[in-house]
Length: 183
Image (cartoon, rainbow, N blue to C red):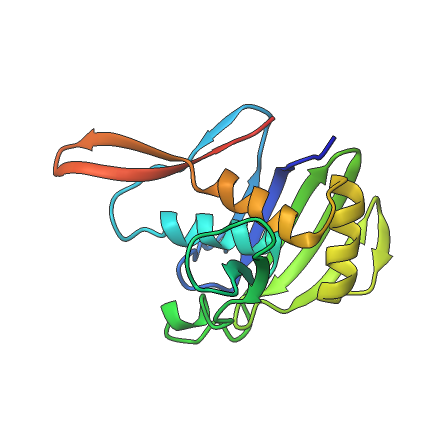
């Protein structure tokens, strides 16, 4: 049985798109079990947030195949993404910005931190035990915790989960908002 991630916490610090308040700078969210909706006006960072969650959960990867076309059995592979995804969106290039994620994968709690300027993993712990903050260590821990055959299977499941969409009618017409389901 394979396990999808259940995101339980997110903190984003020093990122211009999510300045927070003077009392509590940045973005700090503890996610309770249930449905989490991300709703807001255009240009507030909803898509950026969902993209950030995907890269925190799956790392700086995207799915691709050797032929460049649709996915077929035996052709799935994981490729690197443009690592400046979040740096390109803010004036300071996300120089000191970091995102901290807490998620459950099966019976295991993962806590990790990535720099937003280049998506580099800077800390990783599994069940309270520090692990090497490398993509290889992260991928090995995920494959074991999620009970999947390989990392491409994990990345594929995360991509499918993050692609749910909900269309709604706003005052300015039709819009799309991403929806992430919890537990």
